[in-house]
Image (cartoon, rainbow, N blue to C red; front, side, top):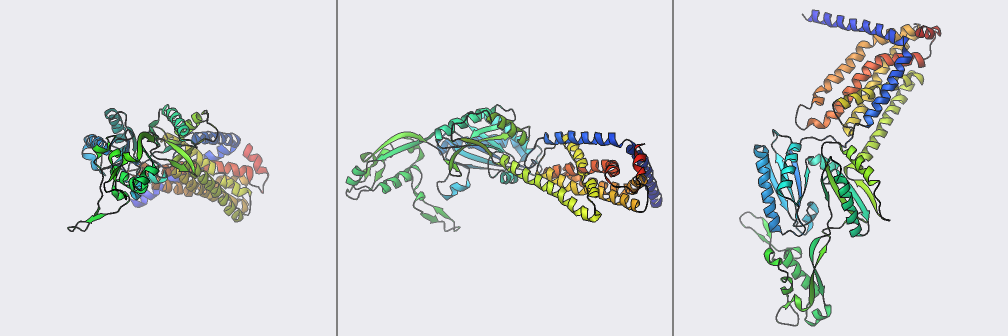
Length: 544
């Protein structure tokens, strides 16, 4: 049975090789028209490839979600805690049995830990959601459902949903959203006005979600004006007065590190004093804060040497290259990041900016432009290096040129398959194109080498082209088949989280398949035009 199977396979391949020889003979007689058609297909493929849409890295379902929550500025920690508790209950109800873990972080500790949280105050929080590995509903779908329900249930609260996980966060330079439009200037009020206009502009694009401004200028604050002369007369040091105010508003642990060690487990806990939060809401509480005096036996109340008034301040002031900045964030749903950023850029081009103020993309969009430029250079270097390596082997510039021209044939297949599968251009797909260059060049190499050897043996140019290409029909077919079938499981993304490698496999499969088909016909045509012939009459035979 094995011998019969091999015989059938051999007969099948031989039959296809004979059919290929006949087809090639016909193609060579119409080589001009065929070549013109291929050039047209390449131009069309290039247009499709450029307009596919692009992103930095393919989105994957990692089963993780982080929800950034921002309430009204000055929201007390107690009220923030109540709101987050209601949100957690809604999340548990929506995710059901798919939920594995839920963690919330509310407010900020005014010390070194503040550097490790995105929160800026008691009005900020983030909710981390971890789904079970076998969750039935996709993470982006949960994000869509929760966005709709939470926006309705908690009006006036800003929400931002990030489903990318740690990989996306790292590629996005830690930003909470892939779209980051940065306004740079000097005056905070002008920056805020520009940021509001940009936010309204971005919100007009249907694919944008969770459009928010990072910085705020409406944080309720107490302005304390200390009369230093009165304070000196009363024996009060301003630095001691400020420490007492900080203790009242936050905790004495900010400037005095006292801790208690639990003898049962050895853990230590910071111990500090502060005022109850409900008393801090009283507008007169700070006036009654007392400070020890060096000249009086009784503590001195704050109202005796200071004036306290209500005001608002910036929640935080961010800088980029020493310049003050405001950041407008937005998530993307239903479209690729590249297309959305292009739409935003087109709208921002019409935005009139005051002198000294600039608007630029940061985060993932900036990384995309930089990375694509580097990979484009890598692709060009791959083609050049392949040409330089082949040139001394053939001792000719013409023959390597034929081989290198196989690369555009693969681009036709890449563009077609990516378009059919709705795959965006990304780092992975560009890496696949670079890999495809090496594979496609190998096709042309084995064809040209065989044809060249037959001509050296004294064969007629046309005969050498047809017979040489037919001799290499099976090697080209086997090389392409092993590559395509080897990458099929990757392209199908059979396991969760494997979606990141799909664009690479799609690019290699599409490019390899089309390069295989077209190489078998286009390389002989190019050889008939470019390569020298020992028999000049053969060129006339080809055009007959």
